[in-house]
Amino acid sequence: MPDEIPTSPVTLEEYAALDMQERRKLWVDISDISDDDLSAHMAEEKEREAIVPKVGSMAPDFVADVLGAGRKRTGEQVRLSELRGQPVGIVFGSYT
Image (cartoon, rainbow, N blue to C red; front, side):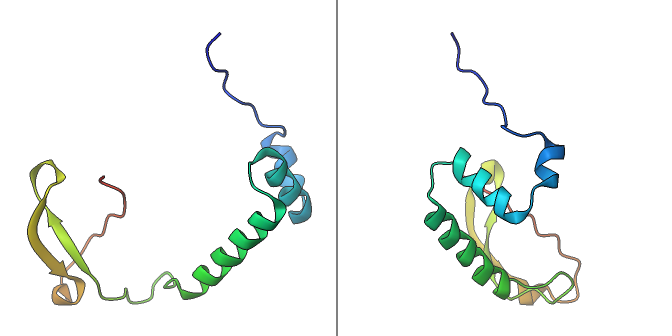
């Protein structure tokens, strides 16, 4: 028999009605991490969120590799601050 697709133990409506404590219990019950691991992960995410630039704020300067055909690095780099005053689109994703 082929692998069966797992089903959720709750519907979206039931999940929406859960309070945070009930959601945490559900997350731990259906995952392979402990409650302590989940607490540590959530603390790390909270710390990270505190340093993430807010929507509408100026982007921090960074250097990015320029990709060419086939998503291969060209050896060129671009610094965001060098593009000040020009329209810039930034696409985040993994090309590996």
